[in-house]
Image 1 (tube, rainbow, N blue to C red):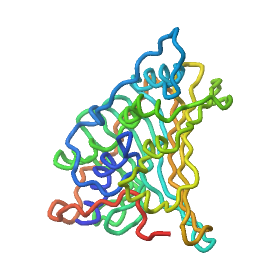
Image 2 (image 1 turned 45 degrees about the vertical axis):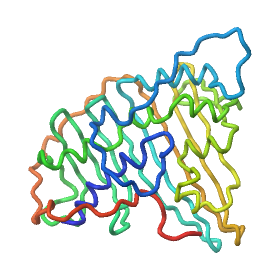
Image 3 (image 1 turned 180 degrees about the vertical axis):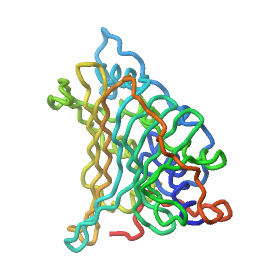
Image 4 (image 1 turned 90 degrees about the vertical axis):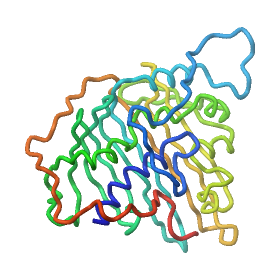
Length: 313
């Protein structure tokens, strides 16, 4: 069934398109991932912060960020909310074009998340739930699938589980932020804020090209063409008193060179908390065997379109 293939394929292309320090929002990928959730992606861990007697370089990562990055990347479980998207203003009309959104609880191999995104063949916005628990994968919320009730939980058969296991994990998304790339962004402290009852320092990046790379807007990206003339690049990190990074938020804003009021912004949001908590992720008690009324394996997966809009400003 083509529609269901689109949904499962969305999980696969999300793992490629939205994981990786220079591809947090990316154009159409050309291959599917083959790694398990625990190995997505391969990244260089941030070094533990050490005091130095020599003056800091302008492109050095502040010790507070280096320490928090290392600690956060090594958590075993967390609650998180990650989303990407595009906001376009054309002829004074604002259009929100969502990319991938994934939120929930990630506990090493076990996960309970809600995933939202666009199907690649119908450009339909969909939201569904996935639970990965040991060797079993459960799904709820699939619509327009004959024989499948979107209000019920289903257990996926083994031949359909690989796609769900390849979806982005919170730890994989965290590891996509490489210390050297963050250092190149030249973060400076710009204030303080309380998040989740923790006192946090807010850091703002100062180097626009490095910010654009971290958000996935590079010279070869389709997104850079969508932006037109780039006006502003922002990326902030919140490091907190408990030693963790609790929020990462960024935006690249541009406008049409011919029509200044026509703008496009690429948005990134990543919020996390409840680090190393023992989440009780359980199997749905009434899960049924996944048995749609049509063969869903006959149709090859469609071309992936993770976030890039079909029309230019």
